Image 1 (spheres, rainbow, N blue to C red):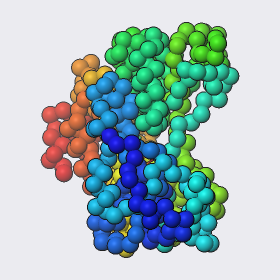
Image 2: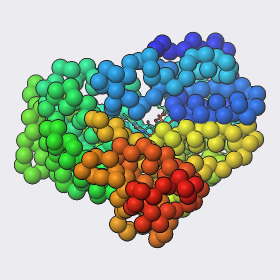
Image 3: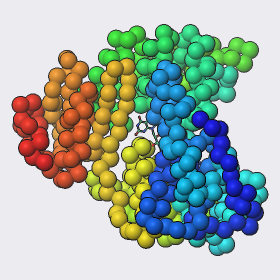
Image 4: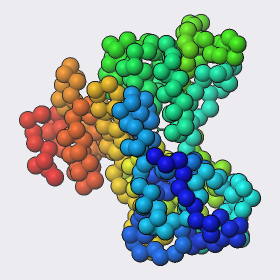
Amino acid sequence: MPATLTVPDSALRSDADFDLVVVGASYAGVGVIAAAREAGFAGRIALVGDEADLPYQRPPLSKGFLLGKAGLASLPLKAESFYVEAEVAFMAGRRAVALDLQARQVLLDDGSQIGFGALALTTGARAAALRCPGAELDGVLSLRSLDEARTLSQRLAAAQAIVIIGGGFIGLEVASAAVTLGKQVSVVEAGPRLIGHAVAHEISAFMQRLHEERGVTVKLATKVERIEGEAGKVVAVICADGSRLPCDLVLAAVGAVPNTELAIEAGLSVEDGIVVDEFCRSSDPEIFAAGDCTSHPNVFARRRMRLSSVQNAHDQGRAAGNAIAGKLEPYKAVPWFWSDQYEVKLQMVGIASGSGPAILRGSMEEGRFSLFRYDGDRLTAIESINRPADHMMGRRLITAGLSPTREQAGDPGFDLRSLA
Ligand SMILES: Cc1cc2nc3c(=O)[nH]c(=O)nc-3n(C[C@H](O)[C@H](O)[C@H](O)COP(=O)(O)OP(=O)(O)OC[C@H]3O[C@@H](n4cnc5c(N)ncnc54)[C@H](O)[C@@H]3O)c2cc1C
């Protein structure tokens, strides 16, 4: 994977003007450019990204990349030729530091300014910082970027014991990879269950059992008090319950923070994420935003929300790109997500709401089941363990607003395809 693209000289002129400037070079930014060009946008496009690498897939970073199964060559979202053919002035390794909305300019970290007609903010999110004594010690890592994944991979190879702070998706995926690599693994989670913000109780319990059976020490409802070091290097994690977990590596996987500072300082409306409408327009109609950095009105959740997923970043990016090209199509893609841990594939579709019990389809004992979640009689979400057909069916049903009855959902003999 080439480290950087060759940037045309003209793109770096301090007085350069573009019809569209995209800030943030990842799923959403690439989606904006691809859709805009496909929809006939013929203007000059600049892509500003503060990472040096070609835009790449993040999900493998906590999965196959750590196991040596997803090599660098497999990571780019698009080949270099995509940016050349789309005639994009790609400013890689360059950070946007301020927006001047009056002058319609983006200020870059080298002091240059580029003018824009339309602007797309696709700045994503960053790993939340761990705030406890010892967080600055050598051996305390986080994981969001390819650079961080390279470091984690190297340090993991040399480590004996890793403590993962945070029992969410990224923490558990790294736990699974570390166990597979023969490491001693502990997961410390402050909440009462694993992945508690995102899945049903039954899935949390299944995942906990799975990890414990593989030898992971799982500590729930446990806060980290401090990280102990010797000669500047991490040696143990001290929990608030007094327990001491010896280790030579710590991964802080305590959530993600949307990169909204540019938008806030420019005076755009921000509530958790950059506030956008169904066409990905911010409070300034010529400034668009998409992906992990946004708060959007979600038709399935029936409320405004911020999603962190490849699906959302890609599809929202495309909606923004279409809108920039004058093709107004509201963003209404059904949300979906996946996580791979050991041989288990967890897939989710929809946004769970309502408080009733989930309906089980399949067998938990056999490790192949789905949970159908309802709000009243409306199917809102399906969470599947090793049942990809249920997941794919769920995408069709929820998109179409179709709900099997609870009896139909719970009857494995009932063919869900008959509804679609
Ligand atoms: C380890 C890991 C595993 C994941 N696994 C899954 C999974 O299995 N399934 C799934 O659906 N999702 C997964 N995700 C989430 C998914 O990767 C994100 O939802 C997705 O990357 C969001 O895309 P985005 O384009 O909105 O933002 P990002 O991918 O966060 O990209 C934003 C880019 O903008 C850059 N940037 C920020 N500010 C500036 C600035 N001022 N100037 C220039 N550049 C800037 C950032 O450095 C970054 O390169 C995972 C994420 C991680 C980190």
